[in-house]
Image 1 (tube, rainbow, N blue to C red):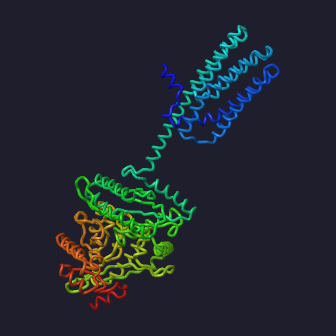
Image 2 (image 1 turned 180 degrees about the vertical axis):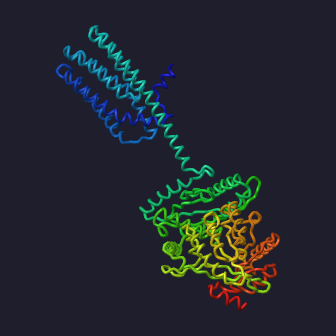
Image 3 (image 1 turned 60 degrees about the horizontal axis):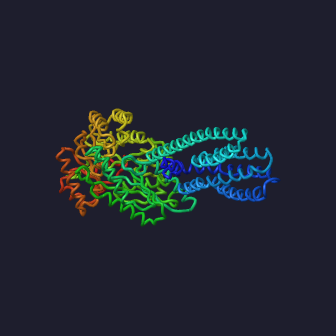
Length: 638
């Protein structure tokens, strides 16, 4: 029983939220309680001034008033304080300790005044004790132990004293106060229990809300912040950097080769690989100013919230690339990938969060095109290129494709006798708004804008019209975009143009890139089959630069492949390029698929490729792209 009473009176430090709630409730109620005590005390002292001695009617209440004023000031200041659990526990414990002496002091003082004065003054004493304790109980209800202490002491003294007077009115009043106090204590206890339940419910709700917030901002696979958290944090860092005129950087990294691993081993391997990538990145990016996130798929991002030099940013990006280039062991299978990183800085390369992200993303994909597996910093030249891209897109929206687009042709020759067997059609655009624009610029822009099919149809029609006048043994090679063959509408329009041209489909080779193949292999296979049924040949362009493999060759009804010029440029000195070209030529021979080698620019290239068994090629060694009107003259002279 004693242990239960101790627990009842002890402040529970195990519930910090409850302590804080009690403190805040107290800080609103306690000033009121001390004010009531002072006012009621001086009212009682005033009615006894003429009868009681000065030390009892003035000095004693003055001392108690000073004490109450100090406690009033403490709790009045506490209204604006958000206390720690320790501070709240200390304040509540002090209240528990002070309740008993305060109750005794005021009760004894009132009883000491009772012998002085007339019957009205005696009644005032009883009224003072009965009413004041009720007010105190209400003010102390958020600390149940203090409320009970005050009730027991004041009402105990009140009851014993007034019952002992043998005056029926006071005896009845004492018994009445006991009954009312008992009921009030039951109400206080019930209110306190509900108060605790409410705080417990709020705590549970807050915990659940925090957990939901954590999960909403966490990537479930890698257990690092997700895209939502990244952009929220990026906005916050940008706002702080703008206010302080600070510099920071954002890096976006994309895994090179992840899709091939996913396709080869399955999604379970892919997920495990992403988990391990997340762990390696966390180990590498340990500094407190690093904020890592997974944006989705195989794309990650890093906020570097510090003013770092371009050299330091390059070094950090290089460390990330090196770490991810090391082999991964997934389910006993060893796989190897790489990472490309794009970095942009604030505020020199972007003035807001959106631009900063887009510029880092631009740097990433620019790097993937130029030097995959390395770090690329967004530069002033990139800024200028983005502006040029915007101008090109605006010009495309206003372009008259029929008048502004033209087709140039580059010969494809038989390397054994340098005889021209075909021409590849190459797009040219002369815009009245932006001038001559390279296909490397306007083709990607048209693809981004969803206008590529319009360009392809116009260019194909012009190419077929020109080729219609060529000798029948000369073939035409034409490049198609991924959008041209991955939509039924686009393919239908291409096939309609071929049928309406009068040019024999059997003389037409349609080139598609590995990007188009990998977009949707099954769908691409069906589309290519339709082109083959029409009579067209189908070439896999730039083979070896992406992730197309032997399985893709087997799955698609291809008629030939083209080896990208990047493998030929340094074939005389780069043994890796030499081996790759040799392997691809052997593969095409074994698959009985024709092979065209791009980028022949020197007699040395021709000698090496002829030695490796190449039979078809194109490049500046033979001819540069020529306009339509020069093709027949070229054929006549060769």
